[in-house]
Image (cartoon, rainbow, N blue to C red; front, side, top):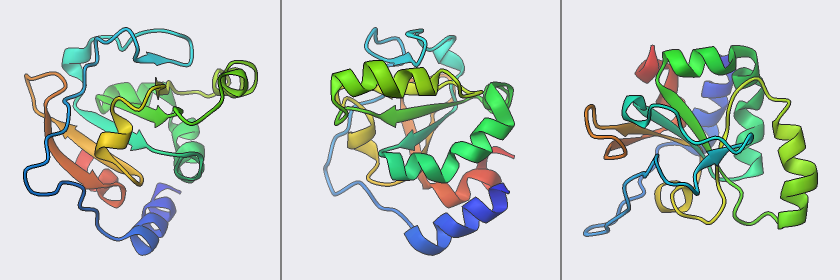
Length: 153
């Protein structure tokens, strides 16, 4: 199933290039009190995060939800990956009463970028960010989502 998703994304999205010359983007601050999952929990062991799957919108989330729900949180932990979703454009009442209750039924954790601190700086489409080993939050490389399987396997 993930191969189908990867082929779909590769075919329709192509490669990504987000940085322009001289552009400075913030590192990820996994210890930020603003970065919590759908249960209002902070990122556990931020120094162990190696990959960040950036999901900038609902359309992108629909592309990966089924596979992530099948794999579950254990797979993400094994791969040292977190999923970060930009919900900054979602009205707070919708977030509180509709989206969060629905997200709590997922079999994996989603870290919520509520104020456009991170996802919007790094991705306009589904992407995977590689974090420098030994430097929590320091971005090493940004990859096209289609490369996910080869990167983490």
